[in-house]
Image 1: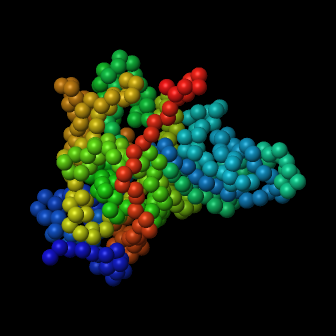
Image 2 (image 1 turned 30 degrees about the vertical axis):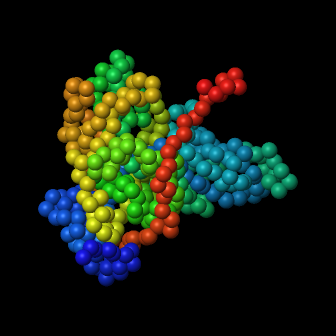
Image 3 (image 1 turned 90 degrees about the vertical axis):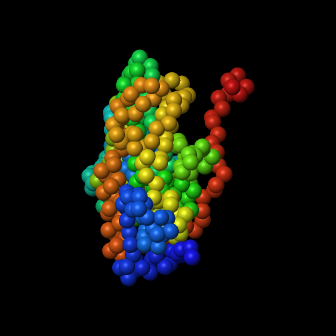
Length: 388
């Protein structure tokens, strides 16, 4: 008889302190000697995690009204431009925005400074209206003085990502780190068998409303992420072999920790934000048990040449090969290095596991599942009235 659990059954076991929870790495080891049916019977929840640079991130902040009030039409936070089109005293600061006078300091740093309770200089300008007569304000804010700080990231937790190499004779400075000439190094980002969307490749349990670990506190998946693409090729284990689905996530920034939300600067590229995400996957049946049992040697990703326009694919490698420290591409051996933190991902997965075991974190059934037949469009450049 096949196992079929419900979310409520699993949550009831969590409340009683009887749930069996494993990290994705632990269940992958269990799968070496247990069948998916046996895993589904014994395990209730598997925790997954990732910690890497996620440029499509940012924060919504409400400053509150001054006296006299101002309709903010230009906003700077520690010199970093913030979006001013959200009513009078709301803003959205993107992680990759930067101070023109100090391009190594950007929105990600402002977000981390706010999380750490540091003072931030707010300067804003407006044209002045009858209801908002003030035209300028310069003051200090922090997370205690503002009304709300909401982390809202439109594209996080990529479901696999290509390996980056550089075949040219010149160093390339990218969001995948510095790529040495003549393919002398290869960088990769996804946390392999711990990565959330690689453990649920068809997103049978992850959807709108899924409760997650986000930046050190509980957050939620609120929508499919931008550039959500479910039509990428898959390998024999059902895993996309390059960047595919993504998540839009949201949470209370005031409750987050800079241990799991860290600003970074990439040389000659710019600022980004490292985000820690952990997602619990309920083991509802044997199919899900099989998915969460995926191992690094079963996960392939595409090697792309970031030195050439269009980043052409050069082949595929497994995460087991990447973790070995060396891959072979077109007959050339290349040393590898991660640009995400496996140690931090493991810590998140363990924290999430302990939170569930302690009854502090229950599993939420999505209120709506994600689309299953989506692809991407490219930006068409128009020159002289004609599309090129």
